[in-house]
Length: 364
Image (cartoon, rainbow, N blue to C red):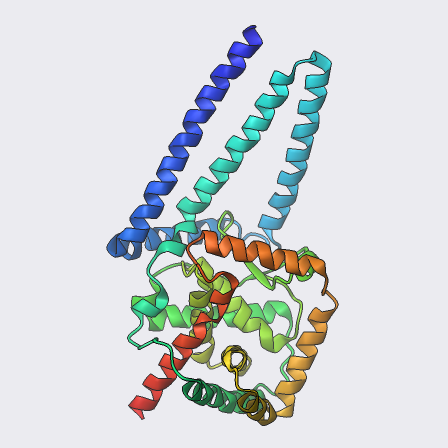
């Protein structure tokens, strides 16, 4: 009887904690969603600063602290459940097992609360396209083709300048970080503050490969992670994408656009080439006219075609059913975080690229 009363008190205290965290999470998300001033002037700067501090604390190793901690956490949970089951069997009392399962639920809610507090509410901040001085309304295919053709010209130019650069992962990561840092200095109105540090190479890169994930940001350790899968020309834009997440650009289309702006403003030929490949790839993929697509593809230099083929071949070995499952999970996650288009939101960067190109043409 005493055991039951003790467990019930534990459930009551835990239930109050869960309710409190749920209310605070909802209130914070609502405040960020409905107050542009609070979102831009308070929450995002707070998130950037804290991410920088946490990232600096975990910068002591070139390896991913998040992956190591996640592995240790999984082992701890497994050991926790085994101990709970053994204790319940020995005591012939299911209350202790129920209590331990409840503690896991409480921990999960706490993790979600910390995620939203540190970084997750950036999904609810005003989208990047609303903060850029361009018209991002939908445009006809002809205008999209013109934008794709412009980036095709840039791909031709910078593929020659890059000259087959196949630098090592760590070197490319440092150069990508320089590009993002330069953008934060050039556009403080857009980028705000925040520590910029090179992304880390994934330890369990093959696992992410089978899931079809090329990079991931961990708000709990402030680390940007990128898999070394693929060829060097495609790495800088992926790295800049993850660093954009760290700086508070949570929506995928926003991180893509920041990645392009960082690469496009870089004086590094490989980084610039990577950004133009990113822009061309999205514009090309958005075209529905097969003749226009063929014209663009035929206009690609052989070096770029070889880079596309080599990158596709590097990822082909990871094809499988897990990739479809991961895509479905990612789609659900994005929709839950106020991105109703789900994984299709990755392509929303096309509207911003078109708008930027129209602005570029009007200036000439």
